[in-house]
Image 1 (tube, rainbow, N blue to C red):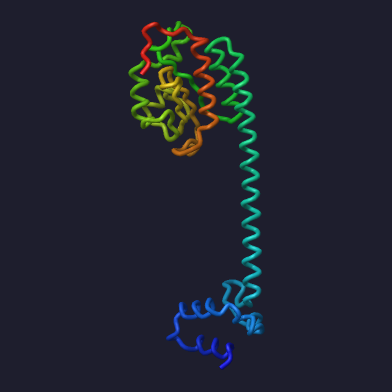
Image 2: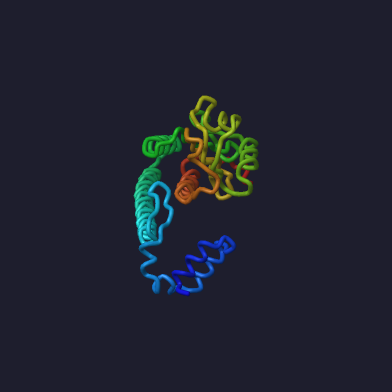
Length: 241
């Protein structure tokens, strides 16, 4: 019996399962080499196109795979371009911060640069009033030690940052009740988080998500934490826990 006749017999015998056919073809990789005419004449159901040959089906799958790979490449190029743009924005912010002469100037730079270029809905520094001696003009940036501890215990889970949705109580404290903020990045300031927080809010509920990379924001907070003691007098009895 020829291979072609065997194939016809398999197709006609319902007792032979698909697994038997698959095993047969896998065990005999030269089957279609010996039966080259079957490659062109074997009709394979293909939905809207009706029946096509095995060669046509394989070529179409190869074209689809090439198209998928090209799309992936385009997406990678787009991501690389976005990352490059993001890095340049943060590099400009880093440079501007090193030229700050006051904390209020630092706050203005953060708001102007981040909100205008990224863009995001809100950017706020929150300074621990138990750590720094805050004059009247800096009181809008103040956060109590108790509030700071509560937020860190609630959001940070032992880490130094939080990315994710924002609740009503935290939204009012960190951004103001009427702020258009639905997700936030919350970063600790200071080696142990003793200086306070940097809070960045987005109107997009999915913008900040758990597990996101915090490399650029982490570097930004290290710069802020280095500059704060130079720009803001600390209390002699500062609580640093």
